[in-house]
Length: 248
Image 1 (cartoon, rainbow, N blue to C red):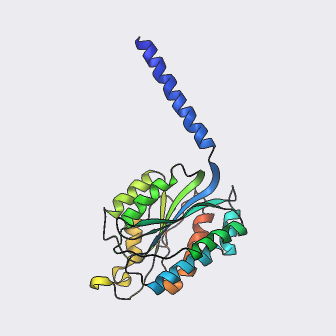
Image 2: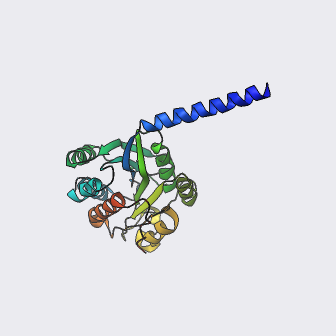
Image 3: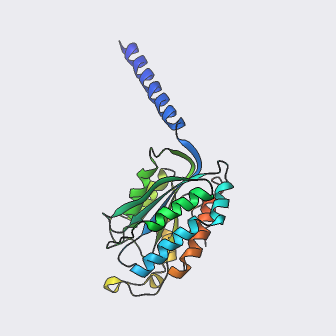
């Protein structure tokens, strides 16, 4: 009876592994699975939100991004766009989409351009990371690399520790890159400005993590388009086996 039970367990485990392998084989191989996690908290006013959104739209449709996509082994990536603010506000604006050429890149950018912009109070980078992590599960793609791209203009001030969220994501093989938006405009409730907080260093020390992770700061919202373009090209074209140096 003991032997029969042991054999049964072995068979069941083998069947489970076979099922997992079959399901995995059905996923489309891509060079990169990328979640763009974008801050829409109350510290970003309507004009800044417009500049930020237009920066992503322009960058995603840029020929340099498409060239980076086409330079990969699979010559395609999967992208999702997530907006976040407080601990209970994370909105999936655009679900996972395959980008493999000019047409698909422009289509994704076009859908983003017409999607309504929204905002909410507070800044929970940790909740944004926690919301992005399960998005990689059963999404139909098998990426050589998985990356969460966090952009924002303030430190974590709601939810659990951002370093704990980062470490949990990295433990699952996910890389987090950062794009802090630096400016000296007054924040709500007389909080320190991003410049006073040395926000780029904060992102480097607390937000980014994983092999090849990096930070590219935007000097202000008008510089955002150039910064996000540089960042997208860098993380799309990065070799998953070669660490990419930090901005430091």
